[in-house]
Length: 156
Length: 156
DNA sequence: ATTCATATTGTATATTTATTCATTTTGGAT
DNA sequence: ATCCAAAATGAATAAATATACAATATGAAT
Image 1: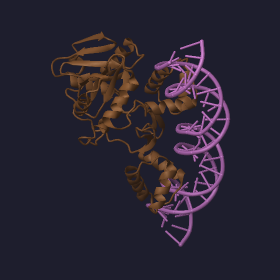
Image 2: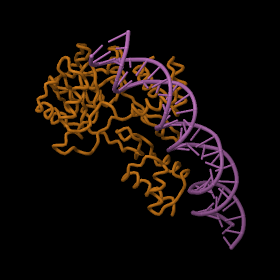
Image 3: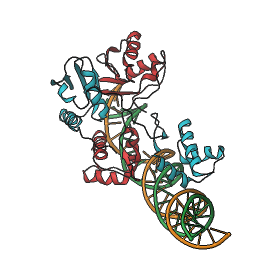
């Protein structure tokens, strides 16, 4: 009955059903043995970026967010804006960027030479940041804040 | 003061301002010399497919419908064959592909936007897939099955 | 274990959006 | 111009969603 499972269930239900209201989703969840309130759903949906849109036939419907690329190109030196999302997983920090920007951002992180950060691996639009053993997530985020001199957290 | 002009104005205002509520839009319109009621706006927005989404910073915002022009995807629908092996290690999934194919396959995985998958990092012939914490290996593999089996997706 | 901070949640309520219904407007066809 | 039907609109209200606040749970540090 934890949050993680609830989010997974929500995503599945939205994907598989044409959900039109939060109340409806609430009932679907109850049917799946997961219970919460509308208030919680409202918050969950916002966090997951699931918004109420249109089904193209005059009706409403909740829609999963599209992974899409923002057209704006970050200016060199303002790599902060090139970070579009961050998630902790497996003790590592996954940093998302617009396509092609991962290397530039990763280089900036590497150059900072912070002890807390063991290293990074950059793909095209994703960076895998591996913290040194024993370093907390918070410490790493603190590092990034320093490096980018801006508020960067995994939360919205 | 006709409908046509109103719709055009609405589109322009939404495009140029971070409109968060219909009331707000109402005031902007009044400022532009066009007056109507919230009821009319609600109907107009639905007709134009303008829905309330998220601004990515925790706030709400009305968004114009996307014209989805997908960038060219190498060999559409044939990404499945590009996976030559998969192995679980350290809670992550290593996916092998022929040389040069990793990015294309990774993009396909990313685009699916599955909650279970925190992110991927693609090299030249290897993809490192990091599941979100608490997600089982089976769930991830289920995801991949879905992503690569559903060649016939219904668009709405 | 205890303390503290932070995150999560429900209840009640406020805010926002959609719809009903009556009225007005618009655009033909005569 | 007059009539009619369809479309558009506003006022009021219903429906749906977001949030303030208080309570509880969780986790880290001691």
